[in-house]
Image 1 (cartoon, one colour):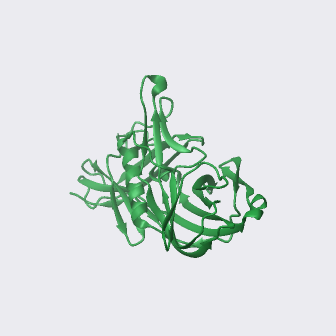
Image 2 (tube, helix red, strand yellow):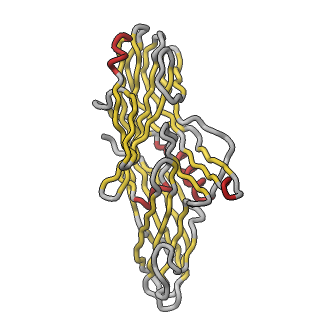
Image 3 (cartoon, helix red, strand yellow):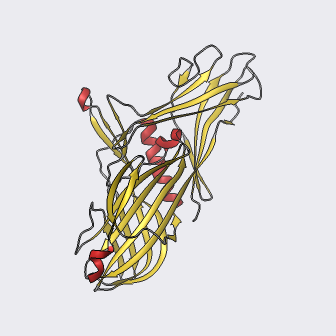
Length: 330
């Protein structure tokens, strides 16, 4: 008998906020601020505009769906590619055409670009990943803007070169993740700065590998090497085993997923089939994962639940996790 049961339904909030600032050229030296950012318990400094008084934007749910689909596919299927993708781009829609700010690692005078700083926070056991995208135009150009668009990409890599293996990377496409209406003019005697904050909020540890890690200046990314492997395992308690992560219960990996868009949400479902012996009235299932990071401490997590099939002794279909990634305005 086939029956779809939900082990867990989590909501990861994806939020975006933006602000536009124009300053006179002579004010530039006192405008940028040295801001302290955190990667969990470690601090670092970034030179950036003030990060208060943000305005609401819109999350591009189709772009988010593309990002999630490509990233999760790479994590589950260990996909590799030799194609690199730019970490970010801002597009300014003007009356005379588009102005594209390409990625650069620093803010420079007499240039255009966008750079990105990352912050990772943890509260009550869950994580928040913040990405500050700083767009700038310090040229003499002049134009009037009606709309802003933010394009981003995610990244992971594997390095087994130290133990006789290979080095390969995976990049998602660069997709539009956020946009907003805007009305301002960049004058020849002023500099333009755009600060865009994208947040993945309230991420339980076991959902970290399913959340795209966007490319960033700090170099934080999920990776595999011969000393640490990112991966997932699902265990079934048959009543005669050590039920826990790394135990000897019957287990399987995640071999696929279902993804669909519903209203303003991207929904992932990870299904697998679990056989039941005759007379079994319930089944314990546990999802365990280990995530290795470059430039950040590794994480691990698990989630378990007991599911009750409608008829004992059958074989049924279980959606072990339904992950809803949704945008909520702020």
